Length: 167
Image (cartoon, rainbow, N blue to C red; front, side, top):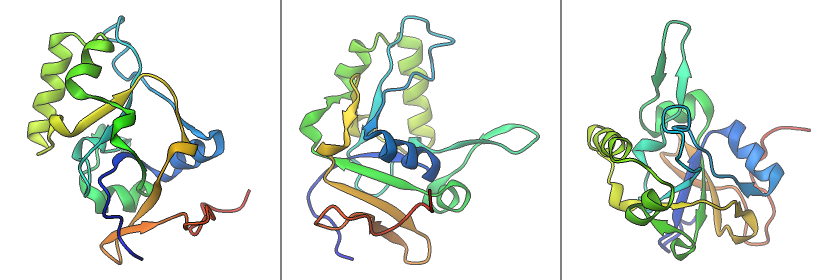
């Protein structure tokens, strides 16, 4: 498969969530910090990192504790790894979206610390507080552990190449 050379803003997720996104036709903002920070608003997150956004790690419960999976291969092995690519100009940069979403300084600090720990770059983060319609999506890709690369899921005619399973 040819690789996309255009810089896109990527939304990373697992297979189950990707299936829900495709079924609904939208990426919906979510608010994981709402319990602790009541005034924060939901955001759909994207990254300009063209390889992988380390903070997009999937959280699992292994029966003993909750933990984050690390890296593309571990995430792909456990939950599958899919990304949706969009024109970056559709979204607001990290420094603006965090203000618009009412993120308190303590939350911003935690997110920044986690990013540094996982070697991510907050300056690559973009967000939207509105649902993002898939009609604006320019690329959908799945991480192939065997190939060691992102593979296109949808061809240039909009036909799905890789299936999630039967309905």
